[in-house]
Amino acid sequence: MATGRPRPTPELLERLRAGKRELHAEQRDLSLPEKVRQLLALQKIDYAIRSARGELEPWQVPWDIEP
Image (tube, rainbow, N blue to C red):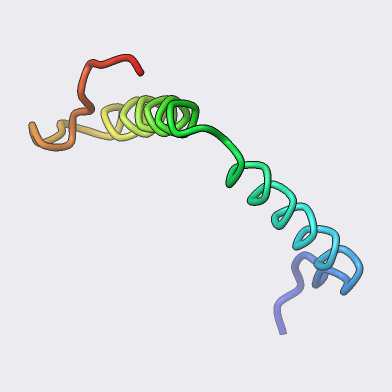
């Protein structure tokens, strides 16, 4: 049997799930312009990672717009 990291405890899993629920509740209450701003910021991060790995297709390049 392989030895590796120990399994997370039930308490840790519940804290992680509670944090995720809280984050989703906060995101749900954001305005649409703020949601779009966050989406564009994440797309720019994704683009930087993907372009570092190789050439992208034209449809994979994010639009150069600001919310």
